Image (tube, rainbow, N blue to C red; front, side, top):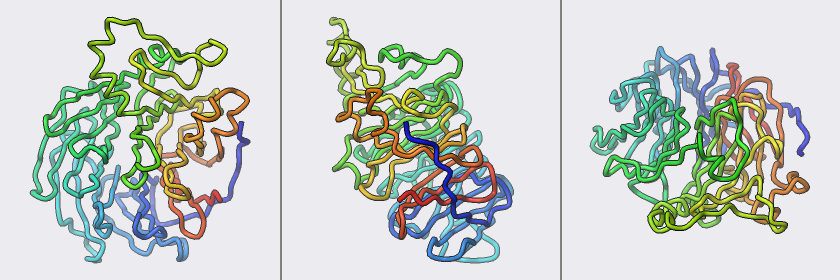
Length: 380
């Protein structure tokens, strides 16, 4: 297993309360934007001293999530309470007034995300719903409901499918939606997922879905069309979405045949790579490979180096882990090869709320935790 490292981070100061979210610019790798429970959004330039280049006090409530407008990164969407606000950083002012306001969610928003064409926002909330907002028409497009039976904690657009999103919740469900129709067409229940995949599950901690990550458009030529899932029991699953969909389409025909678990060369069931009864490939990264021992709060594909090569996870165990996940088909994930999978094991001072990556001079890992200081770790 990779040894625990205590790296000395760069400390970015600008918030007066716990930091909640961070995003890295794709167009300007030195630019980091953070948010906090203080209702503040801070813009940092990693080429400059460790104080914000710009401070935006945008709400009296905590800011739960933020995202850039795709392709127009001077504009940022900020969720606070039940509301989403849009700001243009070029209109710097002492009193920040939003260009757009959206108040469609009935409960607190946990994640807001913009699609790659900058035509829609998706907002996941405590009511278990996902609101799809048309940002060209500035109106509600669709409400995705009657899916999650508990808090919807996260949502992402699928960049290779224009009308689809994927959401996860504290009902242990992962749902793929066609948001033009407003209904899910594929559901993965992680309460039964491990059993169906032949993996030894945990008896106590539920496999709540806290965060998901999907490859960005420019990663798709190197990566499969996958989704990484951060779970409340400390495990990560990487699922091939297209294979899952194919399995759903062929379910009626395969119901007549008995499924079988994948086998290793010696005939025993593999513990960390497996297939469900319809043949869908799935990867399981847990404590047996040096993984997290508490709930995972955030997950991201790396933007530095070969984009998407590494999967970065942060959790309530005060650990950040860098997974060389793309090697798993080669090494087979046997005990002797786990060092090839878990590349870095970084001990951090607080529980992790959010993380992102960027490459500016060095390969940087930006961490928001339960303190008011944003940490930047150099992992090169």
